[in-house]
Length: 371
Image (cartoon, one colour):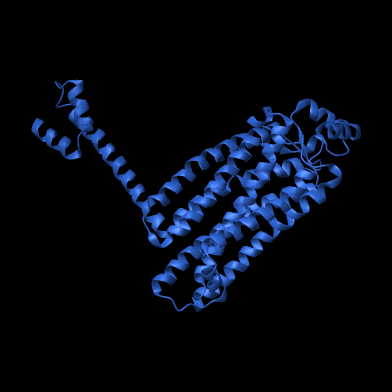
């Protein structure tokens, strides 16, 4: 029995196998869904939501990068120790390269949060009355000024969150010797997984994570406040019926996006941080389960964008109808060939192949001539 970890705290071989398979499957779905969703948005001509479309593409791009980064790490934490080992390809990298990948992953997660926040901000401003002080301010400030303000906010938050993490990055050799001296079971883990990375000095865990934990915890509540203000503004607005319907459609999409963001991204990441901050037992198992939820967010996000935004839903429905029709025609063509095999006993293979690729009408007409 170890001081920090027991054998029972480590994920079983079966759970790790499921984790790897689930991770690869989720990444495969994401790699298909994100480009497909972006293509649907790019080729859907709708001037009303063109600006909002750019915000969606920005979010999906960061989501794709985040999922690829997370899947390449395949992290299995050793909480309550601030360490992890990988079950994916990056485990073969050096400690320095893995730490860089870890810090980049945290930065990408922050950028994904910002991309969703700016969607909320955009729809909120558009839902306000024309004489609203906030909307007037956005109209007065030039676009370049708005961009600079947003960049300043992003840089400030990235610095506030990543600064402490980078500052408290430990010396890997010292951490290894310290933890092995305190807990012999950790020495066995290092023998089994020499790629173990410690990303925080064990004595400064709270200092390194507190800013990120507070920011992440506040994000769903900020989103909820935005949605409430947006909802009230929509119902108080004197705009046209068309404008109201557009706002209602985007509002509904944002509601479900925020729900998915909260339950599939915010809460799992918060649970991972809580497991480390409060030194929960079974921390490695808890984090593996949380990472599985994390990898489900992007496919759900793509689905909700395509379903709740009507122009995109119409395009997808049309594509599905075309595929269904094509599949139905193929079935009829093959059925026609089987019917004609008797009367066409003297036909060559080339002739039959031509009939199979013909239209249903051609097959039926050819069959009548053979009767």
